[in-house]
Image 1 (cartoon, rainbow, N blue to C red):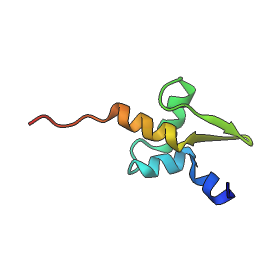
Image 2: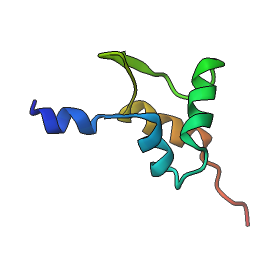
Image 3: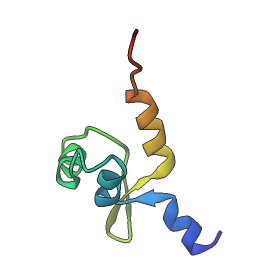
Image 4: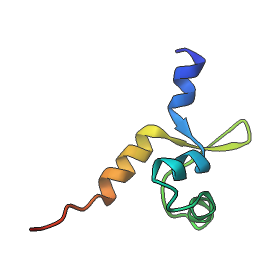
Length: 68
């Protein structure tokens, strides 16, 4: 797997916040991690990363559709 493809499989807290439109902030995502909430994380080369597959699974689990 090419390095560029591999990098796309993981996001840091700032990238994750950006994916969600800036809310929650990267700081809030970090706080969730410290308190054991939110998405599973990985420590890679001393950096906290979130696997894109885990992010997508989390998004599906918290998604709620409006009732008409």
